[in-house]
Length: 90
Length: 402
Image 1 (cartoon, rainbow over the protein chains, first blue to last red):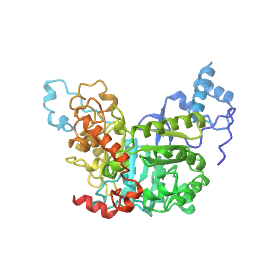
Image 2: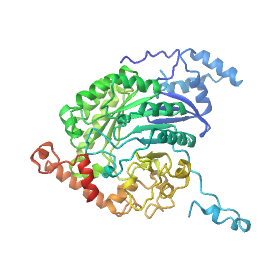
Image 3: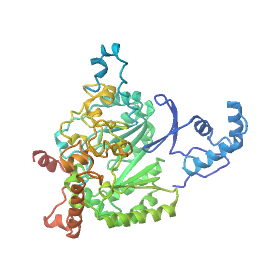
Image 4: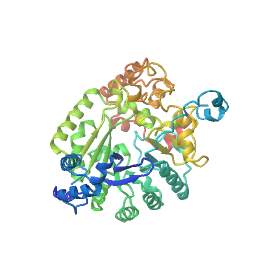
């Protein structure tokens, strides 16, 4: 009954949520009991890396090298904060 | 005619610019499989049709699996396994495994009766994602009275088992004037059993609940008081448990966007394979409902008359047709329009712009008077004065005849 320990240093997708590619919608979605959130590509790329192994900094480095961009830290922080508030991440 | 326009007017397109084809609807994101109408409970607000005994055929395992495969190809992502009581299907584990393999998020909607430790393990292994467990009240007395069973203690045990197996759990409680005053205790119970969501589902008046409307209808004060309790809990418990509480549209001025719009999101399949644009569509006269045994699901969803009938805005009468809210509420609820006016194509009487709004207000008023007279109280059924009509096979047969 204990909730999973929250470790914001290693963001992890809450076990109630499932991240999945939907061919028909041509997008990533987040599935949860009787509901669905359609994600844009950057949200999906961030959540894919919220696996409990990446720290937030590792995650940002990883995204920057994967997409060949720089300076995305503020956006990632803002999204991760939102995702915590929505309960997607623990 | 609408759906065949392209075929019928092929020659015309050589002379005139082609007409825009009817837009292909988006995917039926939510597939509700009502696996059986059989149920050990007898709740007087059951969403099954009142004449369910007439429809006692059930799809086979292979037929259900085929429906799931077809729906998934159309883009369905959420699968609700419901009933009746879906645990009465011995092949539930097989169905879950097939749906999980297709990539569905699989939800089991159950009373908990028949949910043993063994079965919970097998369903988990098959890939079941989530369980929605129903309670009728926070007290044993009312829970067991409303369901006409002694199931309260069993449900409590099942809730603990569900959590022990690590499932996310939605606790569902249908609300009406008998249990609205208990809403705080119901929330406490959801917290106690560790539910992630609590659905406080105010009764919608269709089917069995329509028959029992005078026995169930709350007063406006009860609804507002309950809402205040819910809001106080929300502020206190944060994200620990999400409380879903929707005021029934009998007490609103604008209709709800029923089913998120007809034929936009929801596809129901009844035990006998009848495809439904909404849970209650079966009672609408003149709606020729297709059956998954006779037609591919894609055709049913995209072009069958039943799914086209109230899709979009083309069917709308006034005052909907010229209303600026017509896209927001999609014209409200067709079953409510039918029950209150006798015509499913009229504006939902829940809307205060509907010429029939008075018919809905009259029901609310009758309900209020019945509440004051103690209509539908437990003691009434004991003395046989004004019984609540329970969902039983005998009552279903009687309602079918009348």
